[in-house]
Image (tube, rainbow, N blue to C red; front, top):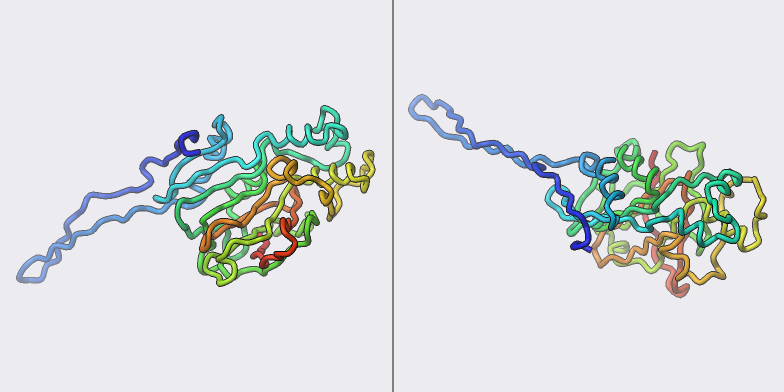
Length: 296
């Protein structure tokens, strides 16, 4: 992956100054005090800007290699050509024009690609929202363009690490946590590398998909009428009779939570554009509850 990815490095991310000598008079002699301006730390949004995302999307391999404050990372689009994949998977329902079908159903679908993954080479503490639970502007913009954002080997800042609650969702029950009437409509899921339970890989994964996928699959399974104009439902129990190998990584994004012991993982998605569910690959292993917080 590294060889295929175009490098993205912020030259000059560290700013140094020449050492200067300051002299303090003691009345009898002078003492030399040497000072050095330390490296400046880039904010998350300064580095992962809209220009950065545009560079990633324009890269023919849909991946980038770079470093953030001295920590190397690999970034990639999780499901390329998402719109085309949905159109092909549900050709029998949508025909050749997914956009028209979405308009008629009253369920917008604006994703060309789906899901962004940023995997750091070593652990990094991240400030992704403030104490007022407001998401970073750059993350809001990313999610609007690309859908869910997945961060591997990253964890929340210590002051906000215990915010939120823990939850475990039903198997293949695709739903939303928040509605358009709620300001904090972004869900942020996390695995805390310092927690005695969550530091271990999880046996239950989180699935995410565009709203229209839930609607289309519901039509295929005979639960919703093809010509329904009722819009999006709050929940869909779907895919239980489906071969998930045809679904995962194709029309549904899977966040597996299986990075090695002691690795932090974070996933963020917008409940206005995406549905999510848990996936129990082996029902005998229920897994622990994942961290959940809602941000505006």
